[in-house]
Picture: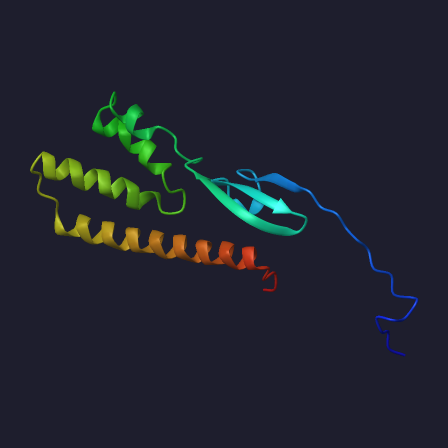
Length: 139
């Protein structure tokens, strides 16, 4: 049996909604801690989104102003927890260029291999997190 608009069992509601500002993040699981969204909603409809970026900024540049090169390396580890070697490598290359240092070929090759493995791991975790955001929970 199908329902029609004239059917007395169909009840229509006149739902009144108010405009509301909703904060989403930076702690919301879908923002991964780095983003806050200010949503202007009317019921279930989002009319405007204002993003606020920079919640992961840790003032690393200011901290680094008062440290020597070797003291700074542990801070670069924490800039990308999945590919920490890549951050360290960037700083090491900058120091070597400033000091006009010669690096052995074997060391350069090892750096390349480790950096690429870190990059691959970072991409795999990133794609996994993206999949979770889309709702793919199957193995």
